[in-house]
Image (cartoon, rainbow, N blue to C red):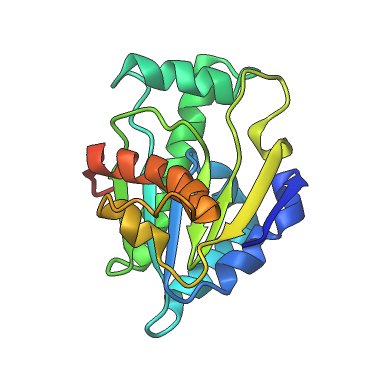
Length: 195
């Protein structure tokens, strides 16, 4: 299993990765307003979702800032340079983008609202796992280190969804399982919403 790391999300060509999706796209890296304002990424997602028998999209979004105290704290970490109004606007832009995708592809897009704070930004495209880190820093998340790895032949996501850990000597699979467990934890606490 190869794990590669780059400095900055822009080095991964996420638009190309999304455009080539054939089975699933999972977004566990809210908010998504920047995806909506990036024409290449927005087109790539729409292209993948428009393919006959193409990818489905599951997006976990943040609740409103007033819903839980952790949302305000989380957005303060993600956007320390923003005031409260700008953070609210970012959440609104994220929901508008997800609403656009959900209304354009109602049978392929599933949006769920998180009820626990996400610990790592995470994207899954088919068997590719992309993950970063959240940090108290003036350097934004997209500019941090981003790693990619493959689940390989085994569908570790399915195992994680069913709580079936890889055996102890499968170090790489256990490491991927650990990352995907963050998504599973959020998913189990999340509630489907219509935008």
